[in-house]
Structures are given as structure tokens and as C-alpha cells.
Length: 325
Length: 285
Image (cartoon, rainbow over all chains, first blue to last red; front, side, top):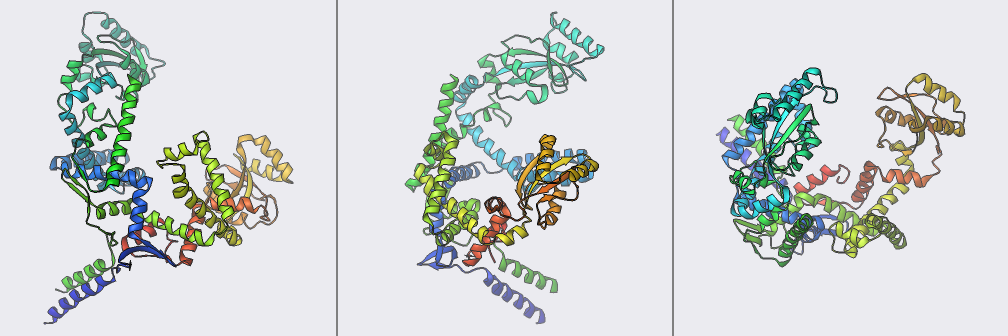
């Protein structure tokens, strides 16, 4: 009996305490958000001010796009597992780099990137994967069109690389010079570039793949790993051409352009996965993809705002292509 | 069972006084704005998205503009500052304010002036009014000093500069000799970008009532030494002091908070109230 009374008291407390949640204040039947003496700020007025503001209009497109992606490409178990794996890798990297202060360092890095914690980062990874699915669907449905544009805009080619490591590329040791000369001599023989790469290259990233870097295009970042000279040379080589020795990061490099053939590269990119360059080469693809969804607008202003944002960005895309042609 | 009761009570406390959703609603809240392709976005959805991203800031800004309308009645002053800002911002677009406004996403120059520039100017004049009316207290609280400084590596070198700096002219001569290691820092407050050790000394420097070189060499956090020459200790150059205080974020919040409290600022949504408190503790009682 005593216990029943206590539970009854507790339940009554919940009801009473929930009453401390604020009562809505209204003026002429409309909600008031805030006030100062003699001035009430109505929810309707605040909504109008925000939605008509520049930032509000831009936010509208982001919001609709976000809703479209969430509804059509919900987070799957695979995405969650991928995100967990990435998070675990990052945590492991931080632990090996910072030891006991890893957690603190990681939290600080996350905060600098505007993330509250590792969970928020995991959520952002999942959202990126959902976004990738949204673009992948568009690319698969418009593959020929997207590939033609990609090929025209970014000059893709297949590149292979041989690295001769040097502790100071400006002043190579005798041993390093000797290896460089041997690779140079071998390139003048009929031993293939691939085999030389497999036997002699010091580049751990590509050695086992016989030097293949895969498809390199104008948006591929080779500079951060190999140096800017390598980046420039990779895009300047013609089909079948081998570069001279290029001084780069931690060594000297030889590059070979193994293919620029459109059909070969197209076949290579046919399977659109999350690492496909087709997903990232065009910042404006999102607007093309957005336009493929059928939306009914029940408000003319909202419709006009969204269409203006999409049209303005597609105009910029067209202008860029005219400039590049 | 007692534990269960305690849990229920605690749950009740939490439930009763916190909120993770907005309670304020717009008219026709459930009316659909956009539908199809698996989505249905209502007025409520879009309003809450806008509130989440810009609501708290917009509420404060909107009501500060209303307060400025009551407090700042000198229309000539408003017009003058609006014109000054128009000229200043037009320079960012080769003298074309229309282009500047469009670059920022506004429909036209007039749209930008009415919806951004005039409220901005009114709020600026409101903060200026607070600072002017509370100048003595603010100079004390924010440890305002006007200074020139020379930074050297050794304490002995710093002490020699102090000894040689018999007057402002002598200090200026030393500044010339030290080139980029010397600067006229002008008016500084406790929130200026200064070395931490120098910042700690501001409360002492602020108390100095006669212009001249500060008697001690101040050891900085990077182990260098700063020699400070204090000028305008009588605080006659109020324009410079007001301008420095206007640029101090903490002073801005204090000024805005003072007016919001004076006009009994109230928010009728728990979540928005909490978000406004996150912007500044000064805004709400």
C-alpha cells in the first residue's frame, strides 16, 4: 500500500513538473516567440523574415536536398559498418601517434573541424555515403552523358610511376645515383615499364601493381604525395610517352602515360563505386541530379526560390564549360 | 521499488524542465510546401530548420533593432553612418554597391540597405551609445590602455631602453631603431590580441595616471621582454577609446545585454531560450 502511494506520488509529480514546460504565449491567436516592452515578435513574422533572407533562401535548397537524400537513400547497415570502420581506423591512428593523449588530441581535431564529438563525425561519414549514393544513382542513369563530360573536362589518362628514393633529392648519394642511372638505362631497353616498376620502384603505393597509379585526371592530387612537378608531368604526357627523371618528394620519378583512349577509360569507370572520380569531378552535378526528382510545390515563392538556385548554379556550370571548350 | 520511485521522480524532473524541440508554431504549420519523391516538407519543418540554424541570432538581432528604433532617434546620425558604410562597402566591388549587394545574395542595393545595412548601423549606434554613457566604468572593467611597445630578447636590453626613455620623443627614437620589433599598439583592452603575460599586466598599466615609460620590463610568454610606453593616460582621446571598445566582442555583448534587459527581453520557447543563452549569458536574466 505504501509502495502504491509512492508510485502514485511519483506519477503525479511527473504531471505537475511537466507543467513547468513553458506555456505558449499568443497575440491575436498567433504564437509569440519573444518580446521586449511593447514589441512582440510573432512566429509568423520571424518565419517570414528568415525565409525571405538571403541565408534562408540558400538554406531552403540545402534542406530540401537533405530531405530528398535521407528519404531516398536511407542509411544502410553497410554504410554504418563503413563509418564504424573509418572511425576505428582514425582512433587507432591517433592512439599510435599520440598514446595516452590520443582521445584529447582527436577531440580537439574534431572540434576544429566543427564536430562536437566522434559520434557527430560518424554521422557525417554516414551522410557523405548517403550523398554518394544519391550521385551514384544519377551517374548510373546518365552514364554516357556524365562520362563524355568527365572525359572532356578533366583529360583522364592511365599513368604508371617508378620511384627512386632519395633521402635528399637535391644531393643524391652515390648509391641513389647508381640506381637512378640503372632505371634510366633499363628504360632504354625493351624491358617493359611495368616490369621495371615491379623490380625497381621504391613507391610502396604502386610497386605491387607494377607502378600503376590508375586513372589520373586534372583533379587528381599527386602533388601532396609526389610533388607538384610529378603532377604537372602526369597531365602533360601523351599516350605511350615516358617522362625524363623528375625530381619530386623524397626521390626521383619516371612516369608513363599508358592509355588515353576514351573507350578504355570509360570501361574502367563503368562500375561506379564510392571511389569513382565521376562522383567528385563536377561540383554542380548535385543540381543536375536534383532536377531528376519530381517535386510538387504548393507555394510559388518556394518553387521560385529553389528553381532560381538550381538555375543559377547550372548557368555557372554551363559558363565554365564554355570557357573550357 | 524505492529505486524505481526515485527514477520516476528524476525522470519527471528532467522531462518537466528541458526541451529538445521547439514549442512555438507558425500559422498553417502542417500545410505542405513541397511533396513528392518520398518527401513532404511542411511549414513546420522548414520553420524549425530555419530556427535551428538562424533563429536565436535573428531574434536577438530583430529585437535589438526595435530597441535601437526607440533609443537612437537622431536620423541625421543614422543617415550619415549608412552613407559612410555604403561608400566603404561599394569599394569592395569597384564602387558599385548594387554589385556588392548582389554578390552577397541580395536582390538589389535597396534590398541590402533596408534589410542589412540600416539594422546593422542602428545596432552599431546603440552599442556606441551604451559605451559613451558608461565610458569610465568600461575603461576600468576592460583595462583600457593606450601604449607603444618595443620587444627585445634580453631583460638587460629592456632595462636600458627604459632608462633611456626619458620622454616620448626619446622612446619614439628607440622605436625607430628597433624597426619591426616596435609598434604603436594604440588603444588596447583586456580582450585585444596581446601576449598573455602582457594581458595580465594590463590591470596595473590601466592604473597609471601619467604618460611615460612603464618602470618594469615585462617578461612575455615567449621569453622576450616588452618595454611599454603609456600615453593618453588621461583618456582624452575618447574617439579612439570608444572605437576600441566597440570592436571588443565582450563589450558588444555587454551593451546588447544591457539594453535587452532594460527592455525586459523574454523568450517563450525553452529551446530557443537555451540557444540564445548559448550565444551570450548577457542577453537574458
